[in-house]
Length: 461
Image (cartoon, rainbow, N blue to C red; front, side, top):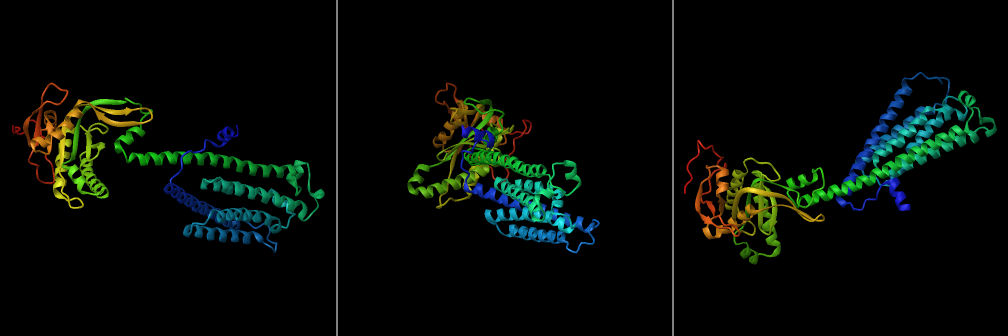
């Protein structure tokens, strides 16, 4: 029952644990908020000083004038604290003390009014400066930490209770000061106990409401930050385009959600990778793979491809699936050619030269989520994907590194130097698939752009 009541009032407790790096980020934001609070308070005290300096002095004959001294002390304290927070990250207990000092200086300013104007102590109980107490309590909400609001509220309530006690017992007896007549209270220096109790209750209730609101907001913040951090970390394990599609969906993605559209698929893996794996330690092998993936990923990103899946040293790259690309076939070819260029130009630690075989196909492809409600995989599947995987393996038989289907060749345009190398009947299909290769990689920085039928050259058979 108490747990349900707690969650009803303060919101559900966050279940996730925030990583240390996220906690540090929140702490940095809290210090920024403390600096903001300091500047706001400095503005307030400067405003007070300006008003006091410019306003006519109604107590010109008073010898003792504590108001400017209290304002000066408050200004000095605010400046010093602001400088400290800028240069140092003070612990919570020091900041809590400064909150109490804030309220104490404000109460001291209010107390000084009766001495400034040579009136009974009850005179200051009607000072409108009390309203700044609520501003100071509200400012503490910028820290997004309820303990500072509670500290400010309790200090303010205690401070006003002390001022009330001082007004009643500090200079005169209570029988001479209290009244039950509201008009008399408003037009004299008499004290209406109920009015002062209302002020203290108002301070405490405002503090309570702000504290509850901050606790609810804090719990919501922790939950959202934990979810956002987890999503951001997990998004590194899938393509950014897939992560964006999942997070921006109007409803939760379900198994089987997907679409069928014409797209291009590139399947690629490293030649003789098993042999290299035998020669390298697991650590060196992982370093080589990471360097290879980084180099190849730059080419894939350059031409709008999306790495849909890693399978050991192999990659499944799609075009026009999660990201719209009307020139998907040509970009798939450019990516395959670009991979060959990058691998030909560099060595990978510890001194290996790598070659990668690529299989390309274009057709109607299903892209979407497969799996269960608890665990999903966003991928592409269908017969056209299987053909691309089969072509990648056929490079061994033809001594090539890029093989593509007739559909890819036709959709990419005739500017690429395709050569027909034969036909292959893919397992499960009756109709043979025409297979084309790119043997001579185009030189230069720019890959050939697709041409129009009027300017295209005949394909070499």
